Structure formats: C-alpha cells, structure tokens
Image (cartoon, rainbow, N blue to C red; front, side):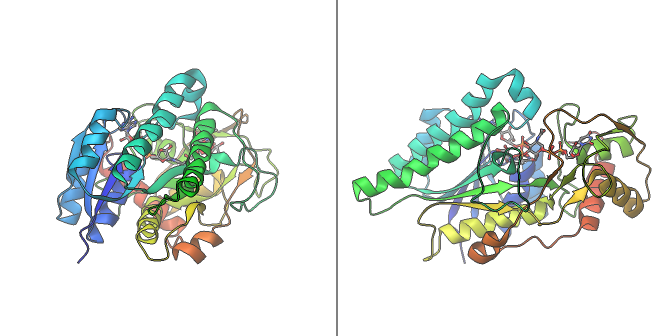
Length: 347
Ligand code: NAD
Ligand code: UD1
C-alpha cells in the first residue's frame, strides 16, 4: 500500500486532472493547488467520481510564497508535479510579462518552498516547443533548444533554472539532492474514456483537436486548415499527437522513478510522444470516419510561426522510465469526441 503524498500544481486543468486519476489509481494521496484561472473545480469532483477516491484541493496561486511554505510545512510531500502555468502561444506574444510572471515566477516560488522543506523531487511540464524550429526529425532530447515566442522562452528559462539546482547541491555537498524530470510533451489530445473529463478551452481554441471537436458539435462553422503546401505526406502540417491518458501515465512513471532507488541524479529531460507523425488531413479524416460525424473544413494559408513537421524520438522515456505511448489514433479521436459530445459546452 502506497500512500505517499504527491503535490499537483494546476491539477484541475486538462493534463493535471488526467494525471490525478493515474496517481489515485496507483494509491498515491493527491494534493492539488490551482487558482482555477483556466479550469473548474468540477474537473476534480469528476476525478473523485471516476476513481472513488478523495482529492485534497487548495484554491490558491503557486506564486503565493506564504501559501506554498504553509503547504510544505503542513504536509510531507514525496514529489511535486508542476503543471500550473499559462500555455497559449499567441497570448504570450501579446502579454509576455504575464507569461514570465506566471510560468517562471511560479516555478521559482515553488522551488524555494521545496528547498526550504527539503522536498526536492520535481516533475516539470515542459513542451516540445523548446526545440524551436527543428532541423532534424525525429527529435531526441539532446537536440539544440531555442524559443520562437515568449511561451516557449518561459519553458526554456525554467528548464535552465532547474538545471542550476543540482549544481548548487554539489557545492553544498547536499545529502538530499534535487531530482528533476523535465517532461517535454508533444501534442496532447483525447480524454478519459468515461468522457466526463477533457480539454475545455475557455476561448476560441488555438489547437487543432478542440477546434475539430467544437466544429463537429456545431459550435464552430468550419475548421481552417492552416497550409496545404508543406513538404509533407499531403501538404498539411505533421505533428506527434499523444493521448492525454498516455501522457498522464508518463507522469506516474516519472514520479515512480523519482521515488525509486534508481532515481534521477540531477535533471533529466524526456520526450513524451508516440514517435508517429500525423497530418492535419489524416487527423480530420480519422475523426470523421471513426466517429461518423462531419467536420467541414477549408484549406487556408499557413499560420505564421508553424513548422511543417514535428515528432518525437521517445526512446529515452522507454529505457529510463519504462514508459511508452500505447493508445492509437482511433482512441484519440474517439475519446476526444466522447468528451465533447457529452459536454458540448465543456464543464
Ligand atoms: P490547463 O490550462 O488546462 O492547466 C493549467 C492549470 O494551471 C489550470 O487549471 C490553471 O487554472 C492553473 N494555473 C495557472 N496558473 C496558475 C498559478 N499561478 N497558480 C495556480 N494555478 C495556476 O493546461 P494543460 O493543457 O493541462 O497544461 C498543463 C501544463 O502543461 C502547462 O504548464 C502547459 O504549458 C504544459 N503543456 C501543455 C501542452 C498542451 O498542449 N496542453 C503542451 C505542452 C506543455
Ligand atoms: C502548439 C503550440 C506549441 C505547443 C503545442 C502543444 C503554436 C505555434 N505552438 O503547437 O507551443 O507546445 O501547441 O499544445 O501555437 N491547425 C490547423 N487549424 C487549426 C489549428 C491547428 O490547421 O485551427 C494545424 C496547425 O497548423 C498544425 C497542427 O494543426 O499543423 C497542430 O496545431 P496545434 O494544435 O495548434 O499545435 P502546434 O502548432 O503543434
């Protein structure tokens, strides 16, 4: 029986709520802090219903130093998963300071509280965006990193900040050094098989899958496919879509690694993707065929800043975390639609 407590920041959000399910099913005690800026407490109620287990919830901001110190002094936290942050690329170009404040500052305050409490196991939500405009595919973790927008730069700054922590341990001869997993997600889609939790963007979706599901359910007139003249299988952009439940299981594996005898020594980055590139047209066709639903679309100009193709080499996660994506494209489109059709207006 395992009842170590895992602190999950941003746990009411899309990936966080799915991860809470995996942690609870593995018998961890789950403590969530979320300011609910981009989510609803309802997601956690549904997590409790799905698992039959309780989630402790604190409504608060990770940048609140006093609150974070209190959380770490009142609880013995075995590991922390840090999802909390802002994630819209376009918005980050318009409001860079908010992005640096929320993403970088929250991580700074969190790590200060962790260090003070000597609780130094961290899983961080990074992104494939840290590879910038990739020259070689598939992407391995040691390929060059760069940022093309403030959101991506915030992730890169955080990765670099976290890399400084084990160095300080060495200088201090720390007997309890930092163990940090940087999880670089590719394109998360899908939802829990129950269809009761899923992605619920508060605005017009920027990402492909929520735009497809909202078009299919009638909230949007048609999908615009950005670019049909890329050097890809059918001219449309290629990405590595990963089912959110596979992604959530990757977090469970990372936590288990951090808490094992064979823990991460310092900081290690892991790509979480399937390794398969899927084009926009392939995704739209799979969605329409599997769900027998129409997705009207038109081909339009490329979206500025987009790359032709991006997919992962996830060998390191397989070798070191004993994790690999197992869910199919069919699971992704079926579960995305199951969630959206049962919850046409989201939570
Ligand atoms: P989400 O918006 O659904 O979840 C983030 C949660 O954090 C929300 O519930 C929000 O209310 C909360 N939050 C934000 N700032 C906070 C703060 N300062 N204090 C407390 N709570 C705060 O997003 P998601 O898709 O679940 O993404 C989770 C993480 O994964 C983010 O860090 C994101 O950058 C990263 N990521 C997401 C994707 C993706 O496509 N969804 C891809 C790569 C990386
Ligand atoms: C976006 C973010 C990236 C983030 C990733 C995962 C940008 C520039 N990048 O990547 O930082 O890590 O999400 O969440 O926003 N598409 C359409 N029509 C649409 C929406 C998308 O054709 O309405 C196409 C895009 O051109 C792309 C593919 O679908 O080829 C995937 O787009 P999207 O879901 O936005 O993800 P990324 O651009 O890969």
